Length: 307
Image 1 (cartoon, rainbow, N blue to C red):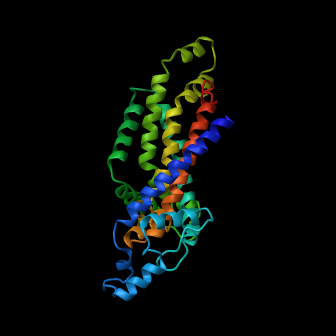
Image 2 (cartoon, rainbow, N blue to C red; image 1 turned 60 degrees about the horizontal axis):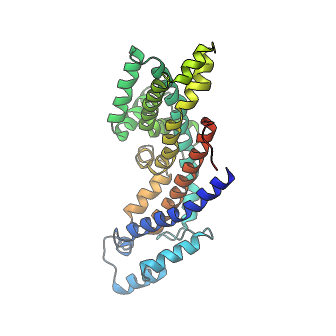
Image 3 (cartoon, helix red, strand yellow; image 1 turned 45 degrees about the horizontal axis):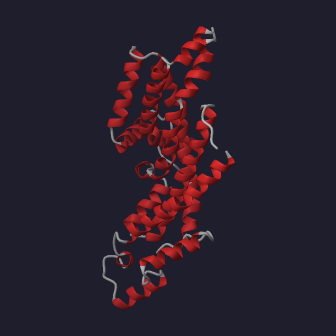
């Protein structure tokens, strides 16, 4: 196991470098950030040259990238064009998005897997058909429509959950945004768990456990569910990064100044340092999440061994 972890960590280095290089190149060719700093009026040549020197934009892109990577290992993600350190923006944005993502993941694990197990064990029955139709509707409806409807019904009309989020963004106020953020992924987790449970239910090891006279609950939790969770864990592990990076719509609806909001503002204002810095951290989140998922495979399935 130790060798495998070390090998995977070494494999992450070229992936990380390649991903950050691609992002850096894409962001640097998306427009002229200096023009955005001057607003609607065009910068005069002297001002443009001064700003380019100040932010290092007068250097070749290759040198800019090497400088960025060198500063990155010291914890310096650069300075936004408004003069604020990118690390300061991260300190305010990432905590609220992490809390939001944790709530969304909890919804996926608790509600999604529970519904998947119920429908997988009752395949073809009315409850199975109803859940399948409901998840299909959730997947088909755009997230911003789902968010606005839930905000109106649960928050404004019925008053069950707070419809807005304060600056501190406590967990109770993030329940509704977390449900909106998790809605589509929750539907996929439900359908994926249902399919996996229904397929493994006919497996030989399940029949053997039933033939031995084991309690139904133990057969489901110890044998059937454990082996059926591998594809679900794979999806949830990859979904962590997607939820953190794809929270732009949810954070816009509930006016949450998290990671998605900062990335959106960075793209809108062509603020390359902000966009590259935030996406760099998201790349690390993806890599670590994938490593954790691979290690969970051995926990769920004893047959899997890492040398």
